[in-house]
Image (cartoon, rainbow, N blue to C red):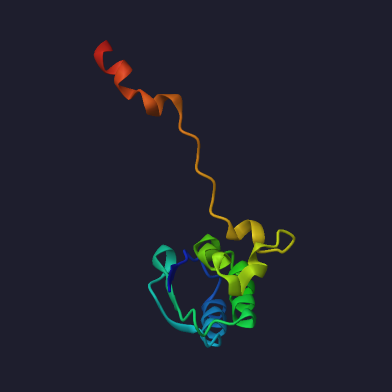
Length: 115
C-alpha cells in the first residue's frame, strides 16, 4: 500500500533523524520516498499489526502529519479500532470535508459580457 503523507518541516537535523529512525523501526514499512509534500510510505498491509499501526499513528501525530491518507485502513476488519471516535487519531484520520462551492464558482460567465 502506497500512502502519500505530506510532512511538516523538521526543526533540526537531529529531529529529522529521529523521525526516520522511528519510521524504519516499524517492520511493516517497506520503504519511503520523496520529501515534504511528496513523501510516500510503502506499507506491507499483510505484515502491518495493530501495534505497528499504533506506533505509526503516534509518530505521525507527534510530527503533525496528515493522517487522512491512512483512512482506507479503517475499512479493514483487522483495524476496526480505528473507527472508535474517542481516540486521539479518529478526527485527524477522517478525510477533510469538501469545501462548499461559492456562488461565483457556479456562474463565472455572468460577468463576462459586462465589459
